[in-house]
Length: 317
Image 1: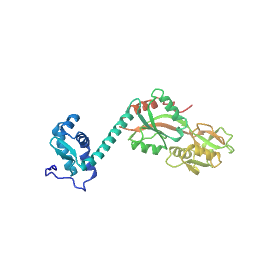
Image 2: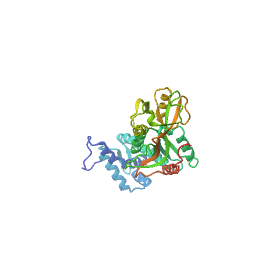
Image 3: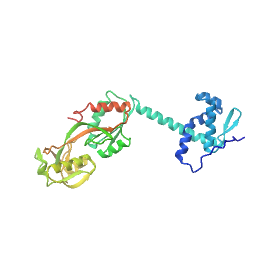
Image 4: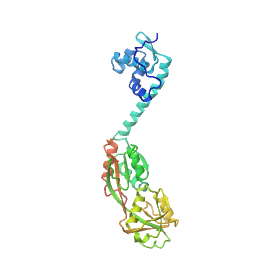
């Protein structure tokens, strides 16, 4: 015989999905336990909840769904066709919750957890590999999810919770972020090897006022620094090409398409000469940033401490 319900109102088919989820989610494990044992008393013992609580939960679940999930036979129950359909989905949902719980616990494990770490493209060839090698000497099983991007994009991903930490330049100043200066990187004026200035070792940036520049696109920290340095030197750069990666710009310079203000390369590039800029002072600050008021997992805390310990010694000599 079908179970007789009380006169409590049911959810209408047009009820919001989120409301239904909030009603059903706490009861899925109880439902699966009863379905598995086909016995309310036994299920209550296994789950260590009062039998009356479990019975009421099943009644409310059926009321909320508006269908019979169980056929009752004294102290035992059996699933109806609707109950079998619902059980299959409930078990998948519970398995996904268990998988997610295992994943977040694994990511927070002090020895084997994960750090989502972002950094500038120019840090990728030498600086970051060196940092990770040094860190893993004491934390050999910590895992990393690495993201290379320009500064503003990394800050967006930091705010979205997709990154734990990022190395960026300029060092951000925002109320929702914590940022610490770690090091400074000198910038050079890079010119083609056959350029009129190529034989020089040093140059004042004002001497390049009539040159064509190749730069990173607007939004990149190095582009902002380039514009600011040129303004300080008394001119606005004439820009022929805008790119997304420093070594691509170095290639454009080697091809004779312009000059550029760039950090030192990991490996010397043929076809260019790199000049020290004596005025204005051409350098960029490198810092680490993270979201304020967000608790760190143990592996993130360990890597953050490691990065802060490298102040003044972050970049290769």
